Image 1 (cartoon, helix red, strand yellow):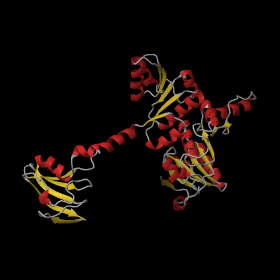
Image 2: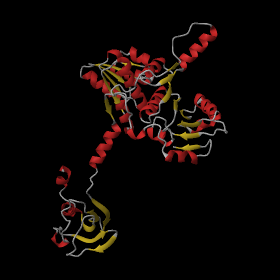
Image 3: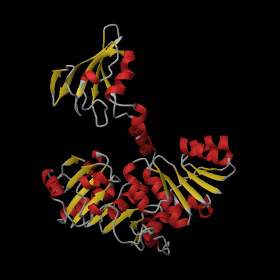
Image 4: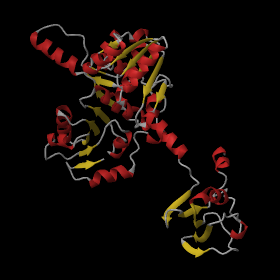
Length: 226
Length: 185
């Protein structure tokens, strides 16, 4: 497979290297001559020190016989133009563009770019997945740091909803002492029944945290599986 | 006529001034406020600072419903992208992109954007003056195709962003801006 990579930044450089290692035919276009020479020193004469957006140089790089064109520069507008030129002017069967602004994805797709890779979107997705929605909130460390002030917000699915505090299995050395409901704080008694949306304030040793989590938030493994 | 100009360089600023004096409604967008210094103090249109290749900026600047959209920045590709956003996302009918690379200029005319190419224009202006035959490089090319062959050519990118419909919000935004003032987008 002949792959034309446009953009000799980190992405383009490692991409070209990996492709060569797996036995593909590769050409890499990088418009900055200094950078182009630097890469050429390392991976050989497949580097073309010209602007891959310019029709003339795309042609010279053999774009018309490329099976895949990967536009991986840091500028969305350049990547779009490279893919469009490859697709419509050189009849390249498969074009891949790096998209930095996730908002551009729809436009790129609409204009016929075959595949989009958006690092921004991927990192966003990863972050959103990793932030636990149901967590205990550490408000403060007390004493010598052995005790913690903890807030637990009872979300739907919490096993504590509808239970009186005396029915909860609260570990030794830990006490639930207040609840904030509709912005009003009141102290928790053994017969206080907890509701969804309550913020329960607890004081406890650090090692009690897992147990508290299980009682007030729910089983973390079950939550992440759902 | 409502005209949007992206890029307030020599060409953009001069065109903006000319059409403003002629009584058209002109909106100029540029990434740098400094470039608005090229506009005369008598300029009655709106100058908006922002990236013309960002759809949100174009909408906030009030580009929706424009009769004419001109992408005249120094970057061929920025012009291509702004012009395609204007066509596909904003549904503007008459769009011109300045593309100085003759190959790209011709390619994008075939993809549905009218293009103006300085390379061709200048060479042929000189050829004519010198009495040489024309170069064959087209300076101004009309749109002759469609830019999204994967679709049937009907319908635009964003259904909500159809052209022609002037939302009251952007009319209001334009009224707020002092004549000739640069407003942040």
